[in-house]
Structures are given as C-alpha cells and as structure tokens.
Length: 257
Ligand SMILES: [Zn+2]
Image 1 (cartoon, rainbow, N blue to C red):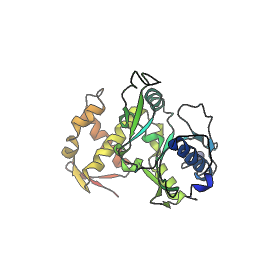
Image 2 (cartoon, protein in one colour; image 1 turned 30 degrees about the vertical axis):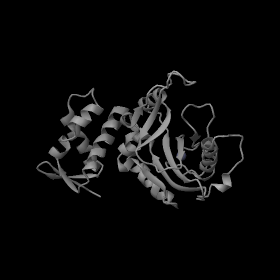
Image 3 (cartoon, helix red, strand yellow; image 1 turned 135 degrees about the vertical axis):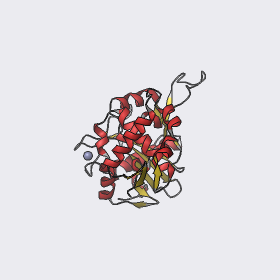
Image 4 (cartoon, rainbow, N blue to C red; image 1 turned 90 degrees about the vertical axis):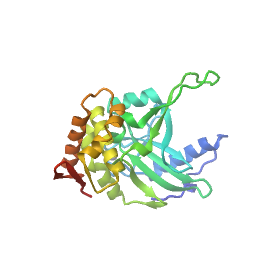
C-alpha cells in the first residue's frame, strides 16, 4: 500500500482546497484500498449521484464511504444528510465507513480507520441543526458521526501513524464481530452501546452493578426500551458467547483479551 497522495494528485477547477483534497483522497482510495471483508484488491467508485455510497466491492457487494480530513480523527465527524443515513441504518444497508487523516503539507495518508457497517447504529449518528434561512439549502439537516462513541472493536485501523496494517489482520478484526451483520439495527445498537460502556470502565474486571451504573445513559439512547437491566444482562451474555467477556460468578466479569 502506497501512502503517498502525490500519485493521485490532480489539477482541478475546484477553487476550494477541501474539494480538491476530497478528489485526491478519493482517487487514492480507489487505487490503493482493498475490500476489508473479502480482500478483493479492486474496489470500484460508484455512480456519482448516489446519495451515500462512494465505492463498491464487486466481489462481495460491500459498499464503502470515505471521509477525509487534515485534522485528527476524534470526537465527531461531519457527514451528509441525516434522514437518508438513519434510513440506511434501519434498512441494514449502511456502507462500511472509512475515515482518513492526511498530512496536507506532505500529502501523505497518516491514519485510516474503518467502522464496519454493522457498527453503524443510530446512537452514533447525531442530528445537526437545520441550515439557517440565509443558506442556499435552507432547512437541510445534516448529521455528525460520533466516532468516539464507537467501541474499539468497531474502530479498525487500516493505516496507523503512517504505517499500513497487514490486510489479513484488518480482515480478521473486521470479521470477528461480523455476526452483527445479520441482526436488526436495534440489536446491533444495543450490542455496540453495551460494549462501549464495558470498554469505558477501562478495567480488566467489573461487576454487574458497575454496568447498571450506565442504565440512565442507556435509557436515554434507547428510550423505547423499558427493561434496561434485562437488556444489559442479555448483551453481557452475547459478549461472553463471543469470548470478549468471561463470567467469573457472583455478578463479576472479566475481559478475555
Ligand atoms: Zn469484498
């Protein structure tokens, strides 16, 4: 994998540096990136009028979107329209999301992270305020992706600090929790949110009551569910079945790896 963006550098009529950068990074992505699901080395740019999809793997039909920025990838990332994003998540048709940080002086890819489509859930999509009445697209509502609210299992490094990770390792991480792909968005969301809070405890072992401490936050994220404690226990069981957690007995849990 060549991390140099000069090879895909193009002169364009774009006046805006961000549009120019978008074109360059997209060309780089099309020429250098592989499919994290099946390791197909050729991914294909999709039709330009597609609302959310930017790239496609013709082997396994996975779809990808790339967001690039020159500042550090953390916290929230501005994305496109809010409603189509939510509809795709609910319909289980969200693409895999890639987030690139590039060095604007050197034109090098510094970091590239991947959020698998099955970790794209409603609680990491933040609705932005409608555009003001003076804007051209008055009333249009965009969204932010809350990158920092995705559990670490869902933030897979493809390039880290200017070093490409072995693609077999990327695929292994990608596929580790791919069982979520067949779940509906509510189940996926619960799994990701409980895993996020398990990671937030930042401890090798913890108790059920530690997890119940997040009940209020989880209730805010899932207002439709009235059985929060039951859901927490259910997700902890799935985490055990996936060998992420070990049940130590007496309401204690430990992290396997
Ligand atoms: Zn593929």
